[in-house]
Image (cartoon, rainbow, N blue to C red; front, top):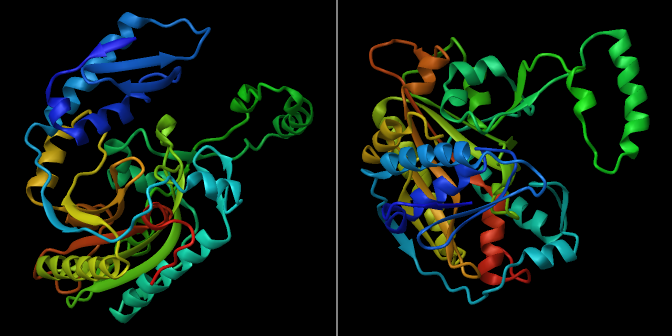
Length: 385
């Protein structure tokens, strides 16, 4: 199927990237989507009946909504470092061949060897900095209640990303039959799991897509000292990326350390700027080629226009993007976010004295991406200075 696009997508790389990512959620039979300079070539699973007229309408709706959401969005480059790396190969093949990276499911990897050491060295730097700032360290489990992500607006803004968790229904016959089918039906090479569906209970839990939601859940209905508070944790995050998964640059499950800060408007802005400055200095010391830009979250198209413009105009989100020489592209490796009052209100968190509005923000370091970008510029024989 071919879908012609408006010229704005030629001028707006971020809009085109966002559109292609969302195309894969239109229909599960879509295997590939490529841009050819004027439009999209979309490939489907062979042997499936496709209602092209219906799909064309849906894709055009998403195209229009995406175009509108980026019309008033201008990405600003706030800082750029040229770096000294001379490597220009994709390190992914060597990482896979050397078993430093082992894929167990699309977008889910086991890490070991040099890349794991690299990530631990990176985290040591950012963890130490967070503790020195006075951040309280926390440890989180992988799941959150679905209720939490409904109340904080995540599911309404990113309905394509949640990965829900379900247990088996508490029913003796279903449990026995599940055991029986698991022994017999795994021999089916196609690995169809429809026989699981009617044995699963309600989806009251979800794999957490961020680190900071745990922190807000821990503070639910509590008061914060008027001098402000900071927290830090490292955890696995999980997002349904459909067919957008690509090596270490787009994962279903990934490792992130966050620093979360709550306080006055000025406190949140100061924290974000200080942590951004520290991260910039580290990457300059590592001689990495990167830039700091204004950005917006990957909202799903419905209702995203106002959110994207608001977030961009007020510069509520910054990203550090590292350069990937082998693909001549930029990859986000850290984000710096000002939530304003959106999350503290959702979780009922306030100041002790309530004499001013409480705000919050967070910074997230994406470690698989960061290590991948470093190796993309310097090769696997390099190490963090």
